[in-house]
Length: 205
Image (cartoon, rainbow, N blue to C red):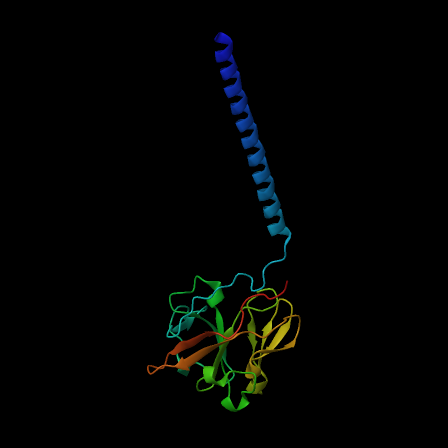
């Protein structure tokens, strides 16, 4: 009888050891897969788009992104032909994906593939994030010939033509800057009218 009891104990102990060993093996395998996944995530190229997700909504007002007027509403009367400024949607400046470059040109200079329905009174806006590696683009104004002004990323010298849908004119940027709709509101401020027409952020990789 005693032998039977001892046998039961030994059997239960064996089962417990087997369960423990199995648990250790499962945990080790799970840990190995987790480490492998983390390694692959680090080694894999960054997903196209760089994770930039805009929160701009039609109707959002544009405000200055920098300078002495930072945060103030962007008014149509403040820009002359050939001028450009960086702007954010009001209250959403903490998201870098929302940064845009607003430009005023002669409407007669607008050419395909620009979306004319997303412009108003010579105002056109594009993502201000270079499609190469994500630097902020700058405006290069030609004082003598405003129509010859252009957008450039000084990080790697990508050049975009604002009168033709921010078409890439030079440098490593793979695609144009995405256009976004703007219009002049009744009070003279500028507001967004659409989402971006294409991907924003770096498209390399």
